[in-house]
Length: 400
Image (tube, rainbow, N blue to C red; front, side):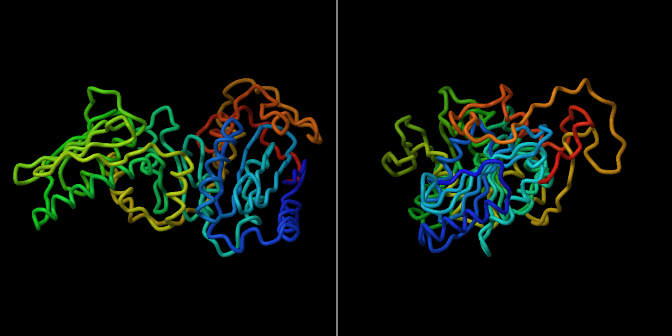
């Protein structure tokens, strides 16, 4: 691992090439580039998950940490790792200070693997508008996680309004074991009958405020053509927000899938004895690994999202986005508009040392060098409608 303090994007590219030459062919080729956007408080978790996913999905890993975007002096600190703690491939962790964080793509673009798809994952509350973050615009697929929002169902509505083919959400990925087990159970009933099965109704019992439970109900509704709702359960559901699923079939039959709280689920179906199947809770790395295995549009997700949110025509939207620039440090989000009245006195700007070598507390101990949580700064970068501190802080602070 090589750490570059107060460096430039070109220096990072050169160091990555140098480590590849001196370290030998750690990986002969990569299938994609995974760009991870995380704030400092979640970097360790993001690194662990991304490196686990990279072990089974060869990729170049680029982790972007936007820190102190309001700082007057821009700076880039980078860690270049080839075949080390971040998986068998190539990885770069970039901490960006000042207005460089608003132009993170200027550093990321030269580091993308040639002729390989790009996947961007926000390990943070999902952005309000992907088009305002260039790291999302350049991606072929975009992964968010509505469960990290204070209002997961509201976050799903935001995702539906801003949806473009190629978008997905980890709340949907968490439902895969439930969906796979339900589909195989209905196939078993169909095989016994030697004819198709029709779902006449049913319900998902669990947490009505859980996005995964709502998406499972939306998926069943879209596939069966009947309304399946989430209803409160008598037991506290697991991490997926689902305690059981009950489906009423034609021919006066019923199928039930019940969480047994032991890492499995009990299947009850007509004319068959009860069966137990594995339904384990998966790690974040396993969820990301699943999403890296597919690069096409996830149509079942868009159909389920339509049912949950009431939006229509999601799959028919254009897949390409046009980048919309906005300056979160000004009161006006769009160039040409008059600025709003100042919302209050500007907070004092934090200072960034000319060189953080040997003094950067994040690099030394993993702690913040400022009491403020970077998650607030991250959401400010992603939210085009976020209020600004003061227009005077919008001046550029030097080279990017």
